[in-house]
Image (cartoon, helix red, strand yellow):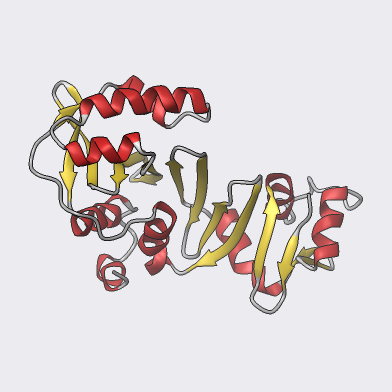
Length: 246
């Protein structure tokens, strides 16, 4: 699989193997004769054994990461898993759905905006108040890489959405996706894990929340979801700076 690099914009498209090789360049584990390294060199992404100057900030973010970000987006067609590496710098590895990824540095203040873009957060109608319990197995099916499992999850989900007929219709028509945002970082010597999950349908948004009986679906407005995205990120990000990117 080819590596594509634009030395003008610093845009890099590569496969998982090439990303690992690029990230490990500063170590002694990369063989100078490695064919994957050769692909990076041929594309111009590596010069004289080090990343191109326009890629060094992103590679440094991977090496110095103090928090990890994973964004899974599942829909009727496919499942994509995006990765973020957060430190003073931030790097995003965006799954393009064909076995390749875009790799780039992102300003910390633009991380919420990047998550919104990846998960396609946008204006939606507001669903009426209510809630519906959802089994963990249904969520697992909807997030599965198996199209058969996702189809089974869609059938179960449609049955759960009876309080919102418009959402049921959208789900059955394939106008839906599930987003899971997972953030892990160390704070005060302990590992902190945060998750934000929601369903997006043409009829409206439903956040996955937990009560004493398990996960439930609750309608959420776009602005509320945006605030939840900001809140799930590590505390070291300046809330004022992040808020201004909304």
